[in-house]
Image (tube, rainbow, N blue to C red; front, side, top):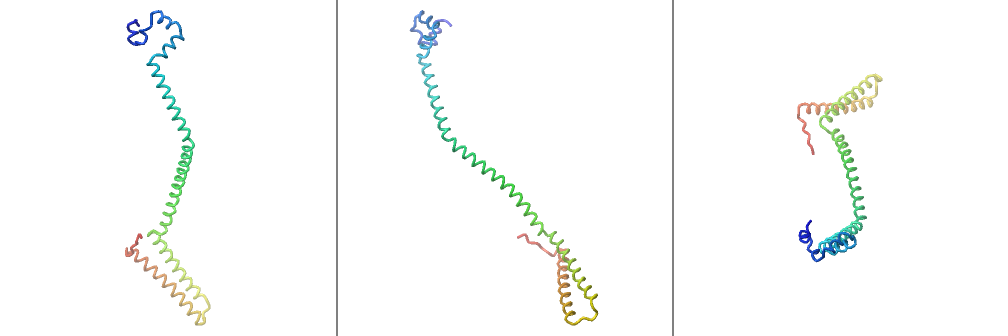
Amino acid sequence: MSMPQLFHDFPELSSLSREDLEELISDPAFFHATFHSLPAVKALLHAQTELGMANESIAKRNLALQDHVYRLRAETQDAFSEAKALQVRQKEVEREQRELYQRYSPSFLLLRLRHSTTAQDDLSESLASSFVRSQPLQPGDVVDEFIRQFKDLRKTYHKRKIWSEQWAADKVAWRDD
């Protein structure tokens, strides 16, 4: 770098003599003193100091907020864990609900009606068979009681049979409410 170029880039050095410039190159203490007295370097050091202080201020503020942030993080984690547990519980409740609703679906109710109709028929036939196998001459009260019971059982059987036939003929409508 030639002298005019040096003075052009660093006009502050133009006031120094050739001997001072040679001493500037050879003496590190003089170089540092001269270097740090340059306005551009002073401005850079001042800017660096301000940035350092701003950084320190931000760090102090972050440290002051640290406990609050950790507390919020823990609360958020707890809320997230609770939400996950509630999602699992919701799936369980929905499964239980489907199982409960299954018991009241039209197809299941028809199946239950048919089974209960068959069971009612078996029960009335069993009562009749046991009455026939019992003693041939029974008092009137026993016969009257048998007739009443048999009549009630058959009435229930026929009601269920009629409901089943109505259902098979699509004359039964199910409300969803």
